[in-house]
Image 1: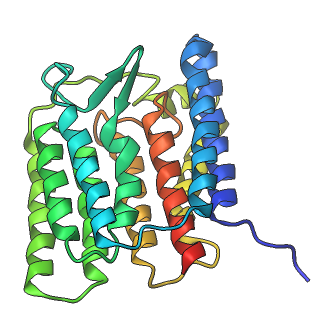
Image 2 (image 1 turned 120 degrees about the vertical axis):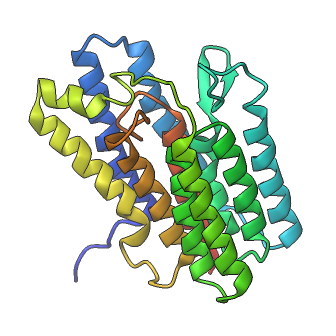
Image 3 (image 1 turned 60 degrees about the horizontal axis):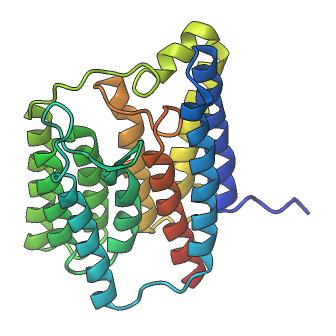
Amino acid sequence: MGGRRPGLIGLFGAASLVAILAGCWTAAQHGIPVTLWGRGIVAWVVGLAIALVLRRSPPLTSDRAAALLAATGVVLLLACFIDPGLDGVHRWIVAGPVRINVASAILPFLIVKLSGRRWAPVALLMVMVLLVAQPDASQASAVAIAGICLLASGKKSGVALGAAAALSVFAILAWFRPDPLTSVAEVEGIIALAWDRAPIVAVIAVGALAVAVATPLLGGVRSRDAAAAALAGYMAVTAFAPAIGAFPVPLVGMTISPVIGFWLGIGALAQRRRSS
């Protein structure tokens, strides 16, 4: 008999840790202080703990509880506009020395929780309006893909088709919004830094990131699991976006929000499967 296959959390944990360590090694080789790159490892440990707790927690079953969760997410995105932002861009809540990219941190979890909810199109459109206003083309595109995956799994109604079209339009609009932020080498350009120092590390980092992104669709996953497809779609878009714009490389780059966010999404998906 073959050995037991790694579960969702185990597979994602292994792949994401390799990606994070490749990024940390690269940052250290380029003189980035441990106080910066060490945060990624800490975030990975914290995220793993949260995912394990989520997997064993009872899922939200009532529409009221899920709606409250969605409303909380929208409020947190709105809170980004309290801070002056950077060059007119409002994506963060500042907590002491740490800037939390709210969308990266909460949207994977929210996407999984919206699966199967009749009012999901309303929540998704509210989120998209705020992402366009921030602006964040990467997150807007990722949510559009995730939302279309969720809508495609439900009843093919006029409302669903209209919502899918609106999500697409908002995603396109986000790319035309002014975004003056420049690329930071250890955040958006980490793959290029790895290639400069050791190409094999860059290859390992990209490969590990690809496996981590595909995790929701691997290892005994139900082919009709809309939440898994939506989460994988979201993660894939955010992983690819740095190739065409100044957006953080999730897991590999020196930013903790995607680490926590990906783990929250994986934990929510593991919880969903355990209860089904």
